[in-house]
Image (cartoon, rainbow, N blue to C red; front, side, top):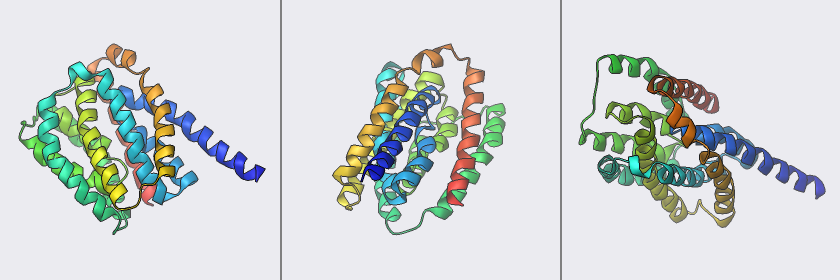
Length: 248
């Protein structure tokens, strides 16, 4: 029994410690928190519990980013995006309980890696998205968010293409993702996947993520736009490789 208790304590200590770092990194670039945590959650709690735990952690993480960058949020983008994203995430969550997401993870991982040179090319072409086109993006990302653990990095090129950077990007993406993950969490509860144990685990880990996020604003304000974009590309690369590794 003591050995089991020590093992459980070690698991929470590791995940919560990494959650501090993941929260700080996610607060700086707007995504990456759940991707960093996902391998550990799968290892310690199993894949069935990991996905709903990630959804709860994402809710807490996005709340912290919304509070920090509230004044910079473009609420029009958030509204248009979520009008399509929320129904799609519910459909995706229902798909998740029926299908293995492995092949989708493989596609997402490859997509993330491909988006690095594509984003640079689009930036050179000064490619921009219009407000109504964010609804189309929301529909696609919403469905994928329901099926897989995290799609924050995939949101990045589209929100940047709309013209959002630094605080405006982080806050608007977080507000948009918040409503998606709330819809995902409610759907999981209705499907019987979300119980009190998972809720407790998600809120505990999310609290450490929130603490990490609280230290991020000063770093973002001091970053140049060039460094900010380079940092995001680096995390997109790591995220893509990580998703491919988990799928493999």
